[in-house]
Image (cartoon, rainbow, N blue to C red):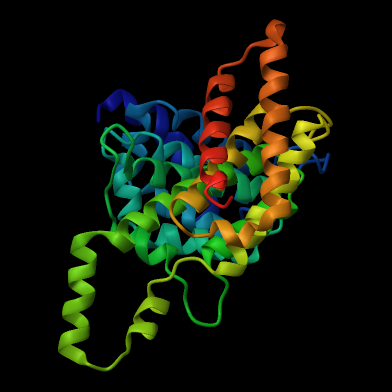
Length: 336
C-alpha cells in the first residue's frame, strides 16, 4: 500500500466513516427522491475505487469492509444497502491478491448475507449480495482440476440452522419468482455452484472420516440424524427447481422467456443447474416423471434447432447450450 493509494481512498473513507460515527447516514436527502444522497454518492466513489486492486487493498487494510457492514445494518435506505453490498462484492473480486479470501474469513460478512436473504425484498440488494456470494463460491471451486476447496465459514453459511429457511431454499424462492433477469442469472449460477460445493464436501473422504469418528466417539446420534444435519438442501426445493426449470426451458424454446424473447444466458444456466441436480443425485430421474422428461427433451431440441438455424446471430453461449442439452438428454434417457 503506497501513500498515493491512501491519498485517493482516505477522503472517501473519512466522509463515509464520519456519517457512520455520527449516525447520520440517512439524515441528508436529495431534493429528488430518485437521486442519490450525498452519503450514497460517497459510497458510489468507494464502489468505483474498489475496482482497482491497489485501492481495494488500501481500503481492506484500513478495515473499511467492517464499516460497510455497519452501513448495511444501520441504514433504512434500499439504495444505501445496494451500494454497500456492491462495494463489498467489488472488493471480493480481487481474489488472487488475498482480498477476497480475507473477506471470506470474516464470518460476519456471511452472517450479514444470510440476514439479507432472510429479510430483504429489493432485487438490487439481493443482486449485489449474490454477486458477493458467487465470488466466494466460484473461487472455492477449481474447475480446471475438478476440485473443491472447502472453507469452514462457507460450509457453516450453507448449513441450515434450526427454525429458519436454508440458503438453498431462499434462492429457490428467488429463482422461481424473480422477473429481474440479472438477479435470475446470478442466482442460477450461484445455485449450480452450491450444488457442486455441497456435493463435494458431503462426499469427501475427509468429511466422511470426521463424521464416522464423531459418531463412534459420541454414540449419541443415529445415522438418520447425522444425515439430516449435513443435508444442505431439501427435496421439495430441488423438485421445485426442476419443475420451474422445465417450464422455463419450454418458454425459452418457444421464444417467450424473460424479456419476451429467447435469452441464451437463462437457457444455458437453467440447463446447467438441472444437469447438476440430476448428476449429483439431488433429484432422481424417476422424480421427474415421464411427462416432464418428454417435455424437457422437446424443449432442448427446439433450443438447439433454433441456435443451429440462426446462423446470423451466433453467440458464445451456443456451444455450451448444445453441450448441456446433450448432457441433459443423456441423463434423462436413463429413465427410459
